[in-house]
Image (cartoon, rainbow, N blue to C red):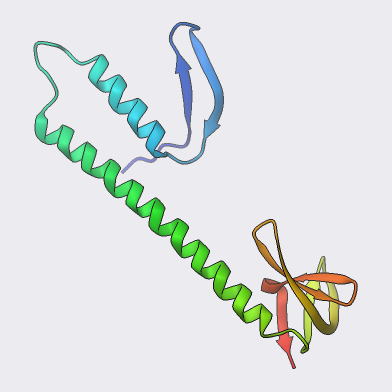
Length: 133
């Protein structure tokens, strides 16, 4: 099965693409493709109803999968926060920019969707901690 490397927005009135290339297909792109397919179909031989229903089903499945992925990401972040909170008062070792940091955890923060541990004056990403004592 061939993959689509990128999709751009084409504006026929301008005769050029508009916007930036998308790396992933989302529900908006899917709907744009579906509407374009319906708009430019041959009126004498319309779209096969079974194929149309299959496309709608595919879109629904894609939306559900995106929702599940978002929920799983939230659960992983909550789990990391819970585990990181349990490290408060404990000594950890971790790396930040190839520099080893060691010390007691005094606080936990969330910065740019990353769980960070406050160790002394440094912030260590939870994911880079390799030892807890």
